[in-house]
Length: 110
Image (cartoon, rainbow, N blue to C red; front, side, top):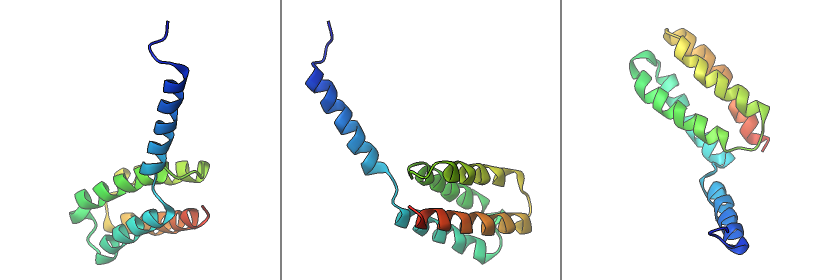
């Protein structure tokens, strides 16, 4: 015998769906995070600010995963993960410029 009635189970599913909607990032929030990260990159010395950059990129990754745009999100998340392999300001900035443009395009298409 089940501990929950059918209506209690449905209620639980509904609240779970509304929780997912509540924590999902909007495209505007994604763009705002991209702009925040971009300001750090434009300041120039990314390597010495790497901890702050990575913290924000990790948050961006989470925000991207809440968007419903499939393979483009997976590609962007993979690209974010690839930043750990880079070591110079030039490499980081070059990769960021590509990623920034992809994410802005992705966010504007949702």
